Image 1 (cartoon, rainbow, N blue to C red):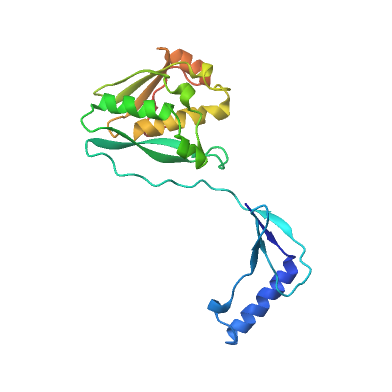
Image 2 (cartoon, rainbow, N blue to C red):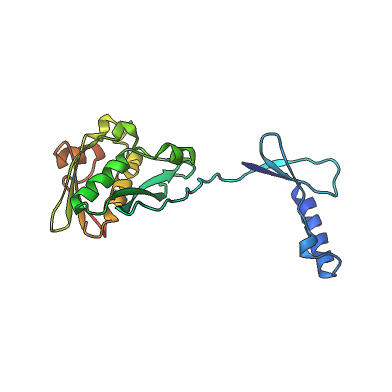
Length: 223
């Protein structure tokens, strides 16, 4: 969306006049209206009523994603979050939580499995229409080989080699786009203290793809 404005000097002069009139009691704040018009392209123009021949310049306003309303969960289910980014944000993009439901009686390991499955499936159609995005999609929906949780708080996550599913997965900018949503989704569970990521059973392969220290745990404090 864009908003247009008249020349700076004339707008300042208009503002000074309005402030002077307000101070003198001749016009109240409630009576001051900024005239605007909506252009054919959907942009908004601020109109200076003292000038008959308007000359405009365009000022960009950053687009934002629209947060979606949440629904009440089924009584037999519990709510967990998966995390996606807004298309309009610059890298590194903030992550926003989106609710998914898992059975209340699911074990910790089952909750982790279902949550990562939901994350790897990517945003829903409605979430994408609201301009939320992720490197995960239906292409990666079945990328989780297994996930185990130990009593020491270690979650071992074995994925299909994402380098075959996500374009440029090994690029430095993509590392955070892939790992941060996984970390955020897993660390929402207080019992998870650290994460061991693997590709097709190998922590070495995982490290080679992302060019990181081999077989390195991601901890809650350090991720």
